[in-house]
Amino acid sequence: MNIGITCYPSLGGSGVVATELGKLLAERGHQVHFITSGMPFRLGSFHPNIFYHEVEVNNYNVFKYPPYDLTLANRMAQVAKNEKLDLLHVHYAVPHALCAFLAKQMVGDHLKIMTTLHGTDITVLGYDSNLRDMIRFGIERSDMVTAVSKDLIHQTHELLHVDKEIIPVYNFVDKRRYYPKDVRELKKKFAPNGEKILMHISNFRAVKRVPDIVEVFAKVREQMPSRLLLIGEGPEMGLVRQMIAEKGLTDDVCFLGKQEDVAEVLSLADVMLLPSSKESFGLVALEAMACGVPVVATVAGGLPEVVLDGETGYLYEIGDVAGMASGTVQLLQNQELYETFSRNSIHRSCETFCHDTITSQYEALYAQLLKG
Ligand code: GMT
Image (tube, rainbow, N blue to C red; front, side, top):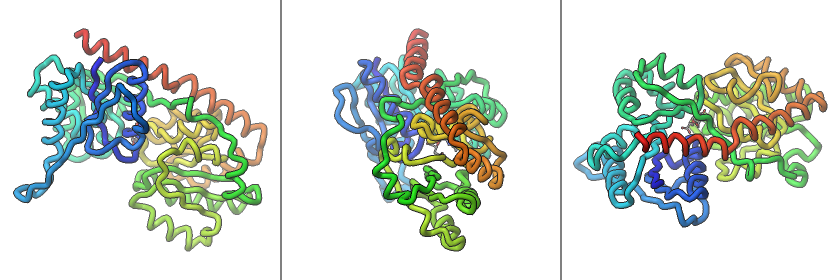
């Protein structure tokens, strides 16, 4: 198949999933054309079946805002014609499903559109009355729609009242790259006295509730020697740094900034913390599990579909920092329990969220889409 993929190419789970899926499809012999505003950050090395078509958005001074959506739609139509695309797989309903719809109007009905919902377009933008009808339109005009969790499907129907079947296709992790690594040497740098390592990776948006992580860490540290590794950058970082300083935690917190390849650092963690208020799936939780790291998180969104409470980690109500701290300590103080959770996590990530299985699911859906 000739497949066009559009996503936001910068850091974020949706960009990771779209890029990794494209690479896996290319490995299976499909021609994959990324149509994006920048090189997807995990695209990596050259592959003969992968092509990159940059969407160059010019900022003419007649416009107040650069016309990204229109330029993208035009580029999608160009690539669809030149490369004889069978389908466009777009990640995010707004604006990508709408751009794909416009491109389809330009090239003809044979071009099929699959839209994958990742969360923010529904759980955040869906509340915006200036956008809601447009999001619904984008979803309904897609030929096929998938979402990364059952909870997100439920929320999409509840919030947008869309008249469209939405198919669940979970995110995946590539077990050839995500597995427990031997990090004994590296651990000496971050935890020189054998401290336990708590980790958080995100884009530090308000929905990640990063201040809760600081609270949880402060409580855990009162009970056992521990260190906190924060990976990523984002709007809440200033506040978090201030909290860490005010609580006198600076010496035990390490900021690693943005990391391109988290597969290398995940094995450093003893526990992954994800106290989000919204999370349609929680890709980083899955990546941690694949590396044998149990997750302490909230019951938000699709997280309970990924993290099994009492088996691969612990789940708490949003904001329950005391619960999250006590669950973390319980896990870290009981070696046998910890090892069981760690084994369960690896097993679950390989079984339910295997990259091969999920790629086959998408392939089967593409075939169904093209048949009619
Ligand atoms: O969580 C973010 O802020 C980034 C966002 C994105 O667009 O990449 O993540 C969303 O998509 C990921 C991949 O499907 C999911 O794992 C995240 O849970 C989801 N984020 C939210 O729902 C807040």
